[in-house]
Image (cartoon, rainbow, N blue to C red; front, side, top):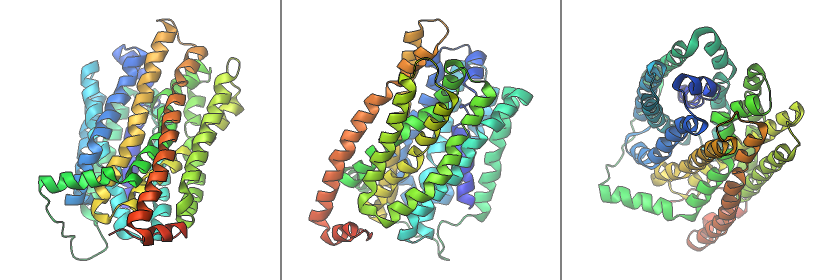
Length: 420
C-alpha cells in the first residue's frame, strides 16, 4: 500500500499542469507551443530515463529508487512553485520527469515480488486505478487551490506530499515478503548492455512497447495538458465544469480496470484484441467530436472522455507483455523499454498539437476549429501504432512457439508459465 500511495502522489505531480496551463501561459507570457514544452520536456526526460531506471531497479530494488524519487519530486515541485522565468521552469519540470521515471516500474517490481503470477494483471490494474486518484487531485482540488491560494502555495503544498511518502517508504516498505534481503548480482557494464539488448530483441517486448505507445497518448495528451484548454477555450465550457470533467477518466478507469485485468488474467492469449478495441473506440469517439459542426454538446464530450478512459487500463497490458515474454532477470529492463512507448507518443502528440494550434490560429485567439485541426494529429500515431501491434503480435507468437513451445502452448490454453 505504501508503494501505491507513492505512485498516487507521483501521478498528482505528473498531472499538475492539467489545470494550470492557462495560468502558466499568463505567468511566463508564452505561446501554445511553449506551453506544450513544459509537458514535452517532462515526458522526454521520463521516457529517456526508463531503460536506465530499469537497470538500476534490477540492481538496487524498489525501496531505494522510491526514496530517491520522493526527494527529487519534492525539490522539483518546490522549485517550480518559486521560479518566474521560463527556462528555470523548464528545468524544474525536467527534474520532475526524473523523479517520476523512478516510480511506476519500481511499484510494479514490488507487485511482482509480493503477488503470484496469476494475480499480477489484476493487481497492476488496481494499482493503476488507485494511482488514478492522484489524477483527481490534479484536477478539481488543484483548480480550487489555484483560485484560493495562488501558484506558489499550491505547488509548494503539493511538493510536501512527497516528503511524507518518502518517509513512509523509508520506514514501512519492504522490497519483498522474505525476511532475508534480496541478493542482487552486480553486473558488469557489458552484462547490463547484453541484458537490455536481449529485452529489446524480444518481439514480445516490442509488442508491449507499441501497445503502450498506441493506447496511452490520446488520454495522456488530454489529461496532462490539452484537455482543459480544449474544453474551456475550444468548447466554451467554464473552468469549473472542465476541471470536473477531467475527473471522469479516473472514475471510469476504476470501472474499466477490474474488467481488463480479469480478462487479461483469464485469456492472456487474446489480450491484443482488447487493446485494439480500446484504440478503435477512442478513435471513433474523437472522430464524432471532430466532425461535429461547431462545438460538440456536453453529453458527447462526456462520452468521449468516458470512452477514452479505457486507454489507461489498456496501456497496462503493454507492461503485462513485458512480464510474459521476459524472464524475471530482465523484468526491469523490459518494463523500462515498454514504458517509454506511451510517453514518447504522448510528448510527440502534445508538441504537435501546440505547433498546429499556433499555425492554425496565426497569433489570433484560438477557436474550436483550431483545436479540431490540432487534435487530428492523433490519427497518424494511431495508424502507426496499430500497424506495429499487428506486426509484433505475429512475431511474438512465432518466436515463443519456436523457442519455448511449452510456454506457447500454455499461453494458447490461457495459462501463463514463467520464462527462465
